[in-house]
Picture 1 (tube, rainbow, N blue to C red):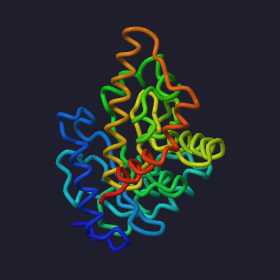
Picture 2: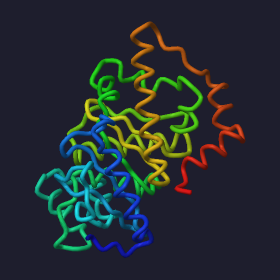
Picture 3: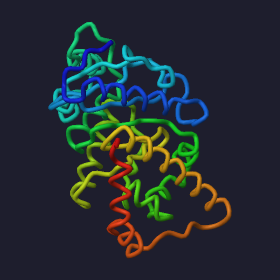
Length: 260
């Protein structure tokens, strides 16, 4: 078992493992084979992330590796382009040199933890979402909320990133849009849509990551249905802001974001 010595401890490791297995359940249609990955902050400058090639649905503690996040963010902001240098950086970031190789998406997970403040990150390839993300209607996902609970769970604004080569190029593309979103809205997005690829969910807890993933998939299904029968009608800015700031909805959001 990977020895996690940071703030997360055994409870956090168990929560990450349970989240990973849940997201990997075949009936959820979120990932197949070795698709997808998860990560959890384990302390200042560290995270636990799924190893490359492991399956989410049958994940075990040995399928995770603890890495230093800041060197990975530094790589993303550097001028490095060589694949071998990226692979070396991933290996060097491990706390335990005998641990498995981190997923290439560890670069993006590190960004979400270090620059967006996420405590848990979940990356999946839902069929319901990729049906839209692999079409010319992907922009409809970020054109505004469709229903109140979408706002409560996902927030008013999400990010859509055009297709980029998974790994370093994708991490750099996401970073550009994360920083833009922070500048425009004063807070990070909870959902990052990746065109022709999948989604990243930035969460406060494992429970929050699962709930947000589920709501994002529900939103995609509703949007697909709306597009099939006509043109989607959305909440206007005033309506969305009202839901986003109502005391009862803020209470619901806090309950959903905690593991209590």
